[in-house]
Figure (tube, rainbow, N blue to C red):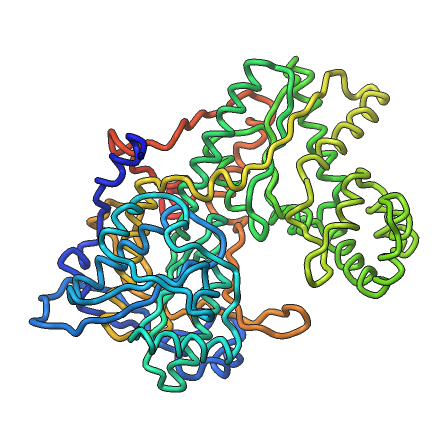
Length: 549
C-alpha cells in the first residue's frame, strides 16, 4: 500500500534542460583547458591522465542513426539526500535513450558493493516504484572510500564480469574525490571504464561557480524550515520557552544560513563568522545572553536560536582544545583506559591540559566534558558531531544570565527546549526543484557516458530559471581539487565551499539579524508544496536566489 501523495508523485514527470529533451545523444561545446582551485602542480602530477580537461556544455543535436548499447554501474555514496533516486531514474532513462538495450546495474550498500560484487540489475519496473521518492533504499549507500589499488582492481574485475564500461558515483566531496581517483587509475591503465560523478550533500558545501547547488540541500532546508517555523509559532503562542535548535552542517553553515533566511529566528550563529572574528566560546554565550536579556526587557521571555552542527570546531580556543585532547588521549591511552568513571576521567584530562585549554575545558558543562573524553572515533579523535552543542549553549547561556541578573542587567525568565534536526530532512520526498535537478543530473551523466567522457562531474546550471533555460554539461573533477593534510598525509580532495561572509546571502542575513533579534518576526514557510501555483511549488532556495540575483 502507498499513500495518496506517493501515488501522485509517482506520476510526476521531472523537467529536463532543452539540450536533453531529445535524448542523451547531444552536441558538445568544449571550453578551454582547466586547472585546479589550488596546488595546481601537485594535482597535475597526481592526475596526469585526467588533469586539464575542458568544461563541456551540451547542445541539442540530431539523433544518430544508431548508438551502441552500454552497461552502466551506479553507486550511492555517503549520507542520504533527497533526490538520489531521481538521479538513478534519469541515468536509466538517459542510457535507454542512447540505446534501448543499454542496462543499468546498482552496486548495493555503496562503494563496498563494487569491491564485494554485491550488485543487482535495475529494471524499468523496479525503478518505477522509486521515482520522485526520498531515501537511498533503492540500492542502499555506504561510506567506504575507494582509494587503494586493490579496491580499484576488484571493482574492475566485477565490472568486466558484467560488461560494465561506465560507473556513476553519486556522492559528496569525498565521494567525488574517490570518483576522480578511480577515473584516473582506469584511464591511466586503459581499463576501458568511464567514471562520472554527481554532486550530492544536504550540507550544501559542494558548490562553486559551476555547481550551483548540491542536490538535497533544497529539500532538507525546506523540511527544517517548516519545523523551525512551527516551533516559532509555538514559541510565540506559549511565550515561555527559548528553543535552541542544532542543524546539520559540520563543515559549513549553509543550512543554518538558509533556514535563517527562510524563518527569521532571533539568533542564528554562522560558524564561518565565528572563525573569522576569532570569537571565544564566552563571547558567543555573552552575545546570545544579551539577545535573551533584550527580549526579556520587552516582556518576551521566548525565542528561537539556530546553531550549526560543527560550530565548536570553528571556535579557535575549542578547536585548539580538541586538538590537544586528541594528542593527549592518544599518548596517555593506557592510563586513561584504566579510569572507569566520568569524574576521574575529566579530572585526569584537566590535569594534563595546558593552562589555556584547561580553562576552556573547565568552563564547559559537565556533560560536555564527559562527551569530549568518552566519544572517540576509531582513530581516537573527538566525535564532534555527537557533542550536544545546543544543550551546551543552553546551559552556558543560563549560567551567564544568572550572572547578569546578579549584576542587575537581566530581569526575566529563561526556560529552554533543545532540538537537533538532522535525519528528519535527509530522506524527505524531494521538492520539485530537487526532483527536476536530480533527474537532469542523472540524464546528464548518461550524456557524458554517451560522449565517451571520464573524470567528469555532471553539471546543470541556471537552475533558478525555468527548466527550459537550464544548461547541462560536465566539469572535470580535477578542477575542483586541492591538497589538504589528512591524518598526517597530503591528500587530493575537493575543496569544501564555506559560507562566504562577503556573499549576498550572508550580507542579507547580517543586515536583518539585529531586527530579528529583538522583534518577533518569525516567518512560517509551511510544508513542501508539490502541486499548485509555480511560485509556491517551484521555488528555489533563498541562498540561490540571492547568489544569482
